[in-house]
Figure (cartoon, rainbow, N blue to C red):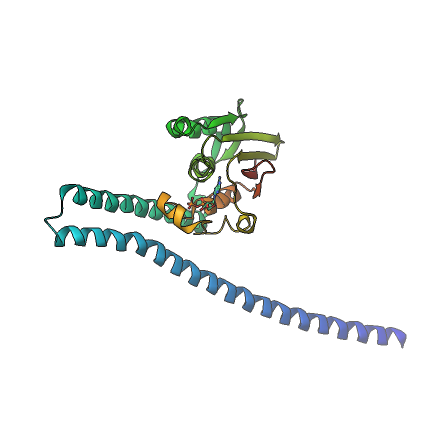
Amino acid sequence: MIFLWLFIVSVVTIVIVVILLGRYLKEEGKHYEEKNTLLKKQMTSNIDHELRTPVTSIRGYLETLLACPDLPREKQHAFLERAYTQTLRLSELISDMALISKMEEKSSNFAKAEVDLCEVANEVFFEFDEKISAKGVVVENMITAPVVLPGNRTLLYTILRNMVENSLKYAGEGITLHLECCSKSDKRISLTYYDTGAGVPEEHIERIFERFYRVSEGRTRDDGGSGLGLSIVKNAVAFHGGSIKATNRNGGGLQFTFTLCR
Ligand code: ADP
């Protein structure tokens, strides 16, 4: 008799658990869908706004030039230059967005091969050589021997390039850029990149990897930043099976700690 009761109680408990679990999953699914729809809406309105801004300004400059053929030559030149700068911003934005959607579509869009991070880092610092000298920046590249992993060269280049470019854009003058491979195992490589510049106000640091997120709208807009750079970095790190974290350094400056899988 006792076994029969035990059996009935177990069956009833299982049925209740299954019902509750079903409800929970349904609620979660609904919540996830709502969140996704909201994110998509925000993304679309961001894209719309980001594309509209440079296009409106190019249109304004060109309309003025067409409507006022007697404008002084210097003024005409200045307007053309501003319109040109906006076209550069526009094409940067379009290629950033194309890269993000390519990464999201399918990971097989990016082939993997043996890549040496030492070579990639040297190339990135070489690309910014002139800016580095002009701003009195010191480079401490501690990756002096090959660090090889199966990865996508373009994406690995993009990771380091974005970080260095950001330091040169936002961190200020006379700073140090430091890149280091902290540990390597058969499975994982841990890296640290930091600059000794201004850093990011603590209340913004959690959000800098979000798409279109800029700490200071006005200043970054002048520099032509799309707010997509670090979102690309995060996706590219994830493509390599790793994760990335940003922190402000005690002595000042922004630090990225990230891992890549081998
Ligand atoms: P953007 O494409 O506009 O440069 P990112 O996604 O690369 O945008 O960076 C997001 C924001 O984080 C930037 O607008 C900038 O304010 C801040 N940021 C990024 N890197 C640094 C840095 N090294 N020092 C200070 N601020 C930074």
